[in-house]
Length: 202
Image 1 (cartoon, helix red, strand yellow):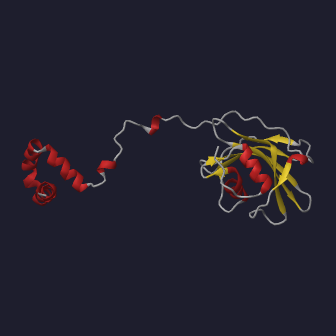
Image 2 (cartoon, helix red, strand yellow):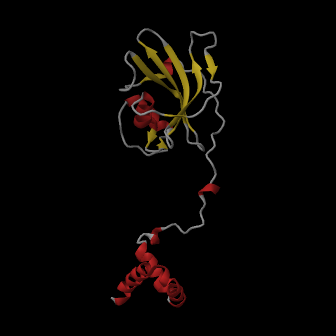
Image 3 (cartoon, rainbow, N blue to C red):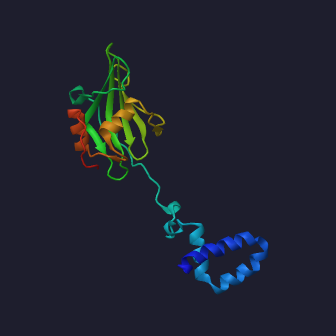
């Protein structure tokens, strides 16, 4: 019992004494190193959980996106209509399941998306989604009515997916399981059925 209380008493005495106790504190450290550890534990009760490993996160390999190949053209027969709550009024979102892929090393989900309006406007985008960071990237644009139906994005970069947007809904409901991408088969099943279930993540 006395050994459990004594470190706290010693700690309080050292603090109260201030500078005048520094010399005695030095002697105490030399003579009773195990009590000093007990005093430190009393001052910081969470010290036993501190990370004492040699791991340095600065030495970890940075994430690198692998080379991207534009997966063909979003043909009408391959487009699946999605039931989305966050799409703008009079707009419908489609996904091309035939070109949907998940990178084996960079874990980026890539697929063609097409947005159509009730007035006939059409815009297709080949996009990548990172579930780990909540980001998306546009690689190419498609529009059959333009002189160049397929146009590669000149300087694509990763952007944060905004909350309450259709991309956020797409990631949460279809593409991602928390911070991990779903497998292509699981994504295709969800896109086809528009049902929410709990499959195994990729």
